[in-house]
Image 1 (spheres, rainbow, N blue to C red):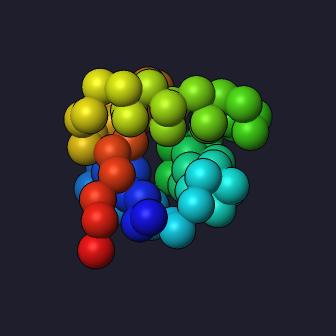
Image 2 (cartoon, one colour):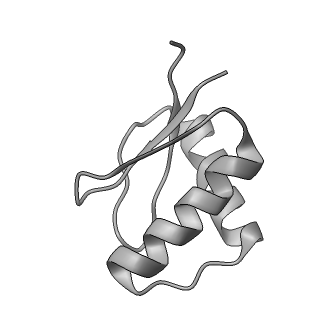
Image 3 (cartoon, helix red, strand yellow):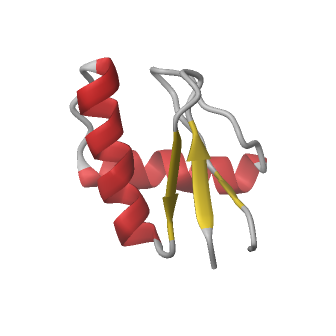
Length: 69
């Protein structure tokens, strides 16, 4: 299943699985926003986004949504 996280800065992190998306979320958070997220923090943001069903994020509290290709 294709997964996407859309940051409020406009960046779209995309991956085919949670592990890859976690890595991409962590990389983007650090490089673009100076946020050092743990794997657990990034995964929590991904799961929270799944529960909310929202395709948006903020710099401090990103969420994610699933999109099928």
